[in-house]
Length: 296
Image (cartoon, rainbow, N blue to C red; front, side, top):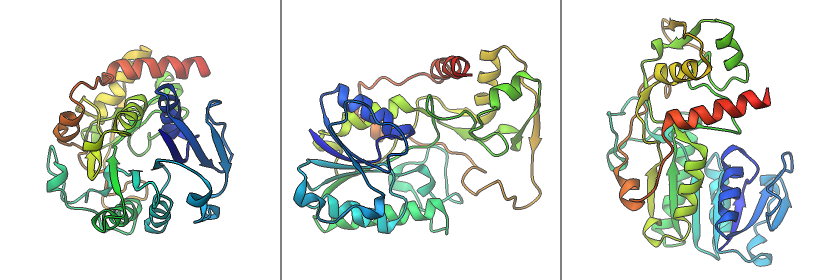
């Protein structure tokens, strides 16, 4: 399949490019050219997103658009226009579209209430609505993926405020520095390995049953943030020292989405990809810590 990729050099999109190319797909990637692309990418368009012409579908042939970088409704309107000929679009969204005040444990996609807040989650939901409206108007068929926390090589470790995605996290833990974990780290998460998410995307590309649907794409292990950091401490052989961080009222580094649980029902995607093999969290983290140590 020939795929137009908006992105292709980022944390997730770069891994998708590697897995998609290995599966025999041909990619046309649109990036700003600030990071290297997989060497086997078939065509690279060095363009800022706002500079992509609406006439692009008239000059290029592709069968699917995959948007990794769409952040708001205007950008997804552009993606819909780019998909007008191939009539297939995949949007990488976020679990932040689920309203933080209405999250039940093991939230199902069809029971969700969505964010209308003036922030990242609200903007992502507005972008989803553009795709859903285009689908309802029979302009295209779409897949929306909503991953929660993504971990693995290409990013930095950490999940919550004060210790979220920090290049120095392992060094701080090895030095014996206590971690100030939001709420003591008791919030629940289902992190997904970046390669698993990339492989899920590849598995959905030409699966007709996947189109017209939205999926929460989370990992197989339900754990607390405390478990996340404890796993790291065990892998590096250092005791974990934790000071609960419990701000009294709103705090500038705590958004509404990370203050609660991020815990989802996995059955919808699992039924579609019944034989998919996920990376166990401890195994994925062990491999990542090794990569981080080799790079330091």
